[in-house]
Length: 222
Image (cartoon, rainbow, N blue to C red):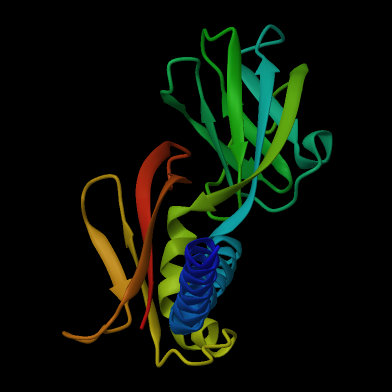
């Protein structure tokens, strides 16, 4: 009986030591878990802020050219404003176009259908011929996209973006954007030593010719 009682006491003691070890381990790693959570929250907030800073509406209208080779497409017909649009054929070749007031004048040529891309980030072009006919609109679609031109805005507005973040225990933050051609822009100067939290995010962006290209956004906090 004494042997069994001694065995039970040993098991209970071992179990107690194991539980105390787990409790000690929990309290020792708790600060690390909190740091990781704080880092994740800051990077997620910065990512959302940058996406909003770099994005805007892109409206794409598909039109028929069966009514003629010179077309006049009113902004009101596709529910857009401003005088910034790019027209392409089904092969992605840009078609001559320009604005006369709120009407987009398109030199359609022999194409059977055209894609018209509207965004405030595109360059303004002036039209010449106002005697063109209105085309049939096949479809209109609007999406929220990242634009190459607005990436520069995010870099120029670094101070305001950083001020909108709650850094808490972090001393600073930064970000960089790598374009499809391999060039990059960046702001923020991370230290040469110490712990730096970072995240790389593959993205698609629209350049000044309405082409969708691949890029990479990297955000950092330290």
